[in-house]
Amino acid sequence: EVQLVESGGGLVQPGGSLRLSCAASGFDFSNYEMNWVRQAPGKGLEWVSYITSRGTTIHYADSVRGRFTISRDNAKNSLYLQMSSLRAEDTAVYFCASAGIAAALDYWGQGTLVTVSS
Amino acid sequence: SYELTQPPSVSVSPGQTASITCSGDNLGDKFTSWYQQKPGQSPVLVIYQDSSRPSGIPERFSGSNSGNKATLTISGTQTMDEADYYCQAWDSSTTLYVFGTGTKVTV
Image 1 (cartoon, rainbow over the protein chains, first blue to last red):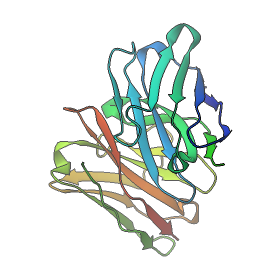
Image 2 (image 1 turned 180 degrees about the vertical axis):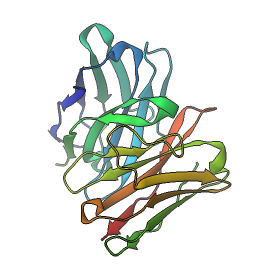
Image 3 (image 1 turned 135 degrees about the vertical axis):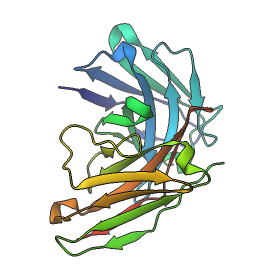
């Protein structure tokens, strides 16, 4: 069974940093492109970042570029999102999701809540 | 930046057909997926590559994509289909993902 389990969310002050993790199991993680997607309270889905299976190509949404860093450790079947210079508008549930055929996000984690507030 | 527009809400009677549109410039040139999200849950992929259904997704879900519009159709809508639905496009030239604004389907 495919499982993606996010962790690392919590309350952080504006300007602070946080590192999210996503533990993958039940599939060959090292061969899959991965993404982070977020959803602010009561809002729609927003794509955040993408990384290829070997980490050679990375993309970010304009809203987080220069502040967030995506990475992965295939030996540990884990995906990460290092977030810095956090703002109130970064408050959201952050999901990790695997990319399958035609880049569809075929498996999603349960999400981890990040709250940026003083 | 690329944008995808969906109607905020669609209402349908049980057993009837619901159609949800997703509009974007030359959307037909991109791969489109659709996701279902129920309150408090993670999104679930219901259509990929414009019209393909993942394993386990009922046949009543279908999709199409041409020109500037993609459409998700739910035939014989059931009360369990009440949820938010999001389209998503992937631009192979930029490898960037874009989500639609989302549609709340009420049955």
